[in-house]
Image (tube, rainbow, N blue to C red; front, side, top):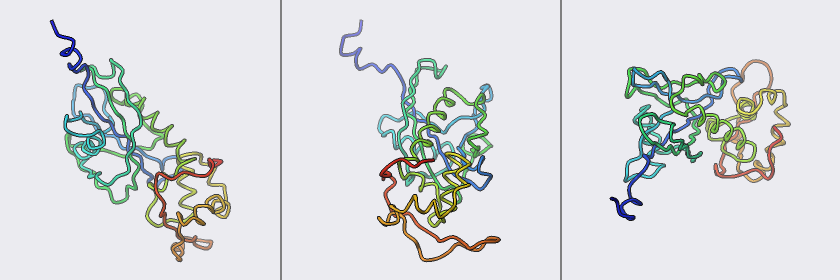
Length: 244
């Protein structure tokens, strides 16, 4: 019979991390916001896609485990990425192989220079538009994790500055408008760039958004937009929520 001390110290669940990686890619506004999904390596599974995830080693933090998950599942070095914890998912039935609780994370990255390599299978991880996620094809409770992550980011870009993590180092107000449209509402594209600039006037005045003194390359008709860079902290917040 176990003593009280032995019973308390006996683990009842294994800890894992799963990472929801979001990016913006060149596509239509409805398909530009995308998430990274990895192929399942086990051929007997009915689920063919999953979020990058690993079991947590006893000597690593959750943040370290999340970055390791991206390396071993996708071949991506995420040591300098923006990561934040999303939520803990611990249903006793979420994994048929045993009791596993997942501490899920969100990563926001600008993916133009990211190289994805196959690690556990012959097929590499793939970007999937958020509007085209194969919900019924996801492993475990990853559909629930993804829905939570989508809601978190859609809400957070209204009051926090994290969206700038998805933009290139130098961008225009049109680029900023397109990013919000992809995540929040395609109708935002109907807003003029001058009105977009007015919404961000406080950031410009505070030097969080800095004009670089150049214009974008000309693309068709119309005057190219001014170029900006973001110099503020990703943890910054708006004075009030954006109206989109």
